[in-house]
Image 1: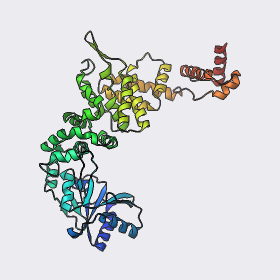
Image 2 (image 1 turned 90 degrees about the horizontal axis):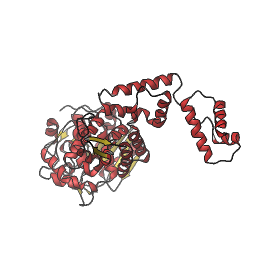
Image 3 (image 1 turned 60 degrees about the horizontal axis):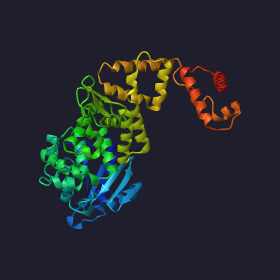
Image 4 (image 1 turned 60 degrees about the vertical axis):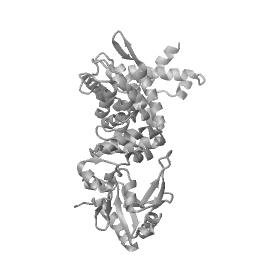
Length: 458
């Protein structure tokens, strides 16, 4: 089987092979890198397994010791993690991890195992899926498939656990593998093998032993793939979605009026997620933008309303994202987009220029994102025309230099000097008055503003 090593990795692999020959050890490229080479995908995350020539000399620090030797020979920065028997080197601007063949023993209440030196075969079977358990011997580029299913599953486009008949244990030991299976099936366009899928369903209630940070990181990877809706449908089908985003899972119970959408709120949400484009903040905002509808659902005289669902949804989104340890700035930005995502739909030709400027001020730096999510919410609906009109209206004002009010035309010190009054709440009210005047007429001069303020004081 002919494999082509990408040019940027050739010199790195030559250096590793040179040292492996010098100290008489076997070196293998392992994991997803090998899988991606076989699939003609751009590989990344170069992991190198260092194994002694004879199994009798299994030693925990063989990967570390090899990395130290390589670091010394080529003067490379190194990071050592003795607890895990691994080390990382930066080689030609690529981060390369060096590991030992290992086996793992899990505690039932933790997904962080104890690790021990092991044979190549034991290492292959402790991995998650067969397609990630292939080894590529560096000196001759021979592919080693110790599970006997890896190459076949790549050919058949299947995600399957490494140990047939032990599927449930594999996912119960590390439930994060459930999200990894879903993500990789999307990234690779593979199907999840039936017994593997059943085991994922069985282990879904164990997700609580996975840290919020690790769940968050997998969700981020899922949200930037093409058509992430498939992942959330898969999570829902195995009972995992309600564990991670119970706010989202509840939306399946709400059917919107057909004059707006012909599917339930959950399915509509997933359509918006796919349409909104490959941007993490936008995708997350789209995913959570309607979660306020469950609490605000109201049926009266055969009419369904969700009054202020965007306000409630923004608050719920912040709570959900904090639960998964997203950074504060990310939470606030997503919440602001959700809170304002309905406003573009309110646009009509009767809006004054001042109304457009108020809208822009409300959106602030999130304007572009809010317009995009509103378009995605409409889809190809006729309502999209009004958003195009709004964008054109904004562009016209921009070209006329009539878009935004001048920033800080009068600061607090100037106001104190002008009105000869001590600092107090009146300054904030005065600034609000200035802002309102500039929204109505952004061409006003400083002198005209002061005159108007003095007049209002009398």
